[in-house]
Length: 365
Image (cartoon, rainbow, N blue to C red; front, side, top):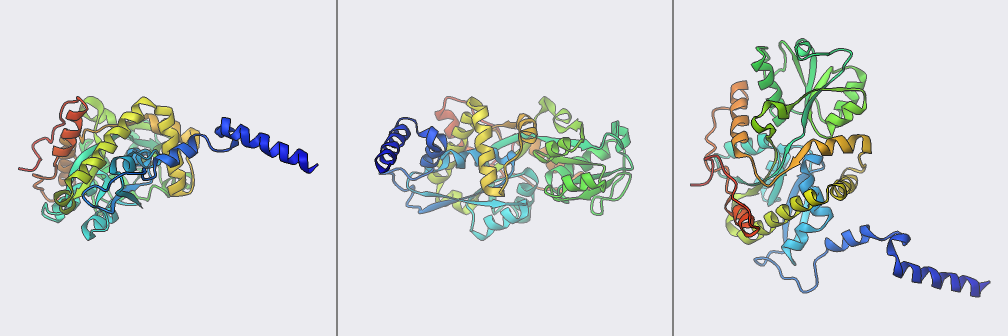
């Protein structure tokens, strides 16, 4: 009996060597290996680590996939890639300002607010990450047309956030009056955390929501209907949803490390476009690790389809979003000159045989 067990163990060991995926390893083990510091690697500019921030959200999938597949660690050599997740833009900006974060993935509104409140001294936008992925989803039993939105309760994620500004601007263009601070008016704007919005929808306390993915697809899975895709409101159907920012102090002191992270971001986006199914799975796996729960396919698949991953920060659309915030009374007329420094990104793109991206006249002078 003992001899048979020993023989069986030997056979199993041989099979695992020949086909590791059959023994619970496979791609997962390979992915984990890529995130480790390679033997013989050297630190960049003598740095022990680079601290990278992002949201556990599909619109930050470049960061999710780059971490999961080890692109950042590979680019940084023996300098450790350390990660921090955030739930809201203001907390990420605070971490950047305090020096506990070096580089982050973030939406355009908090980037604008962070830049203007510091009078242009705390951050730069150094690259793009994602575009699109925002929809107006409604209860089809209460709202059947765009005109029906008037008089209804529509959720946005947070006062003054990117989607809140977009909805207020859309409502104003339809001639509806809404007080931006209170959310009261011809349509009621209910500021609701994205984590809570699906439950608010199910309870009937809101009639719809102007939200990013995957919250939009979660609402559709609960019976909601996409009434409007924000892409249709923009020239060429594209607008920035996620950018890459860096502390100005860190950018000045460690340009090689910043370029390494940008190289990793560009490599990650290229890999996402080349392997969309694998990239989607990698993003979902990292979401599960960060948020404690993976997205079901009925939410993940449509959400992933609606997001465009791009290295271009789409600076002209950020300028427009700032103008929308001013129009809504949520932002004083800002001077955004210097909010972008795309020098290192354009170096990375040139090395890859690609053309430069534009800062819409808002670059460093």
